[in-house]
Length: 134
Image 1: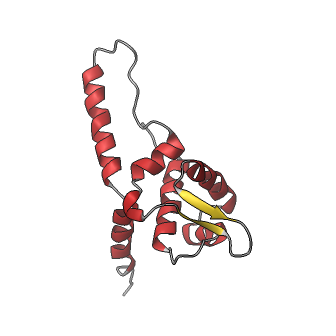
Image 2: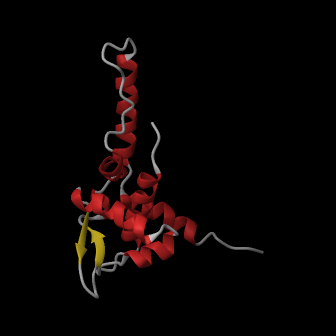
């Protein structure tokens, strides 16, 4: 199993929306400037996240995107599945290692479903104050 750039940047986009949520919609141009991901690529990602019900959009001069739920209610699993599809390395039918793969998939699901955007934002906030040089 490999997470594509779409999945990685989708997590980054959602993290940015969580961290900079002031109650207003956030433009993709602002997200692009903060994350270094092109606005065009973010548009593709946010479209899938919107279809999955994870973000809301608004058009116009005060438009942009915001989370559709509280950061505590959105898991990294929700985001990755919306962008990557199933996260399981699928065994072939009749695979003699079926029980191994079932356990492997269970561990993956448990982990990605235990990490919320709120947890990611909190760990990111801890790092923000530690960027200094002497």
